[in-house]
Image (cartoon, rainbow, N blue to C red; front, side):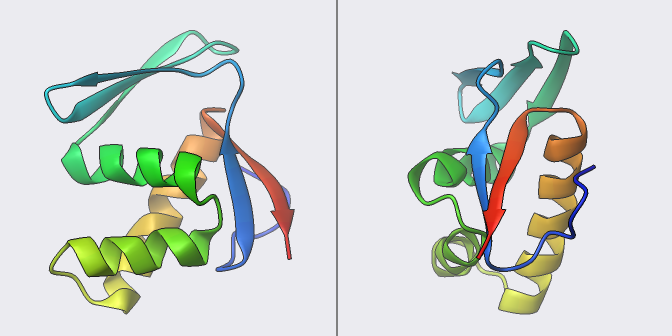
Length: 98
């Protein structure tokens, strides 16, 4: 888990050692540092892609709300949980919190 709390302004990036493969809409990730596989469902896969495109939490949550039938509070709660887990598994990194 990261030192600072994850907020809407937290900026993220894929960990440079993380490997990603999209298998029919679901992602398989491999963390280079921990050599452990991590699977993502289609929504998690889309979040992974969005982190690469617009790495701040606020941008990702806006895209998820727009693309899926989910309210912002639930999307934000789910996103924070996934991000914390991906950080813990060293698949993404916190760059900054503006």
